[in-house]
Length: 368
Length: 189
Image (tube, each protein chain N blue to C red):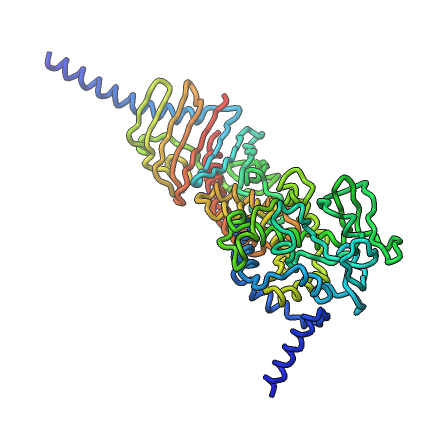
């Protein structure tokens, strides 16, 4: 009887999902998320990036259509406070109705956070262009005004408003100037974590240190660079901005809700929502410097070499933010153990030097 | 004729013996000379890391003043900024009278409270000695006797440079821990 009821319940959920009806999801994030990341063992750098690529593509069992992005929106991006409609990506306001007409102010349509025109021809409305972790609902005019602006810092930009159905301004969603759009602080982290997901997933595995493109067709994968979507002079500078936004705007309930919802539909998760520290571990120069320094200290063979490498590792550790330190707790424990061993050895040598100095003074003091 | 040859040989033998004894006695005598300052630098090497201590001995009225600057390896602290060379420096001075410590100031480094007999250049303390013009080199077979303090060490060697008084004395040895130790004396008349 219980199995019958459970089966009927699952069928009911499936029907509701297909009808685009918001289905409350039970919070199973903790246990499911941790099991999901069992294959991720690397501490950082390209090794971690490759493992994350393999994970998100291997678990991506259903490549959704562009219509799915419309039909599932009220499931993945339900309006806040139980209202009817969706939560708009840039402003977090509630918008009730969808439209496919770009002139219908106050309604929402599908926003490519990483615009098609900036994908180097990699996607239109499939593959990366219809990934539910990527496509977000946005107010029509907000979407249109942002257009295909790259993301970046716009200190003196013009405000970009969402519109009400009567065409008047609703809410500021960011600023833009010169082809660059800067979202509000409360959306910057969302943007960063989506961009990093898309970069990790849709770069072909040879570009990111992975081993496979999973079950997706190879034509859906290619070469992506962060500078295609971030206004920056270099990949390092682009990564630095995204890491800053990742730290500035922590993961919120909007993101965790949609991560769970998309997981149940597509089969994969956005790792940068479950583990925002992965971003620093892959791209953070501070984290990379720290990990490299700890590795060097482990390999040092002599006391002098150990001292020098541990001092460098301590300097790198002190440069980490609290979030980065927490993310690298394993490496930090190794560092602390190495420091304790070094200090014990140093104390032994200091005692020896103290004895030697004592003998020397005792002997020299006999001279006139 | 045969008697004259025997006398000549005996005289030479006596002379050689006297010269050998005089060399060591002469060096011992240099230790009793008055020096305005004696600087002793002790360097101890543990693998690829070294600590250096400098002691400057001067007269202090009826006693001796020993000013010191010594290095120690600094403990690492993940929450603190480590010293660039990984060392900390301790400084201070002590006064000894009658071979006893009477006062001290500065950083505590565990100075002895009683001074020893000092260096001694007795022939029986050495082997393989060679003397050049103002130089002496030898293996030290009795380190405790030579240094005037009880100590455990191996492979001790001494090199001295002198004129009428000492210019420098270098003492090298291997400690019981296995570290390489060098004592470098510089004498200022």
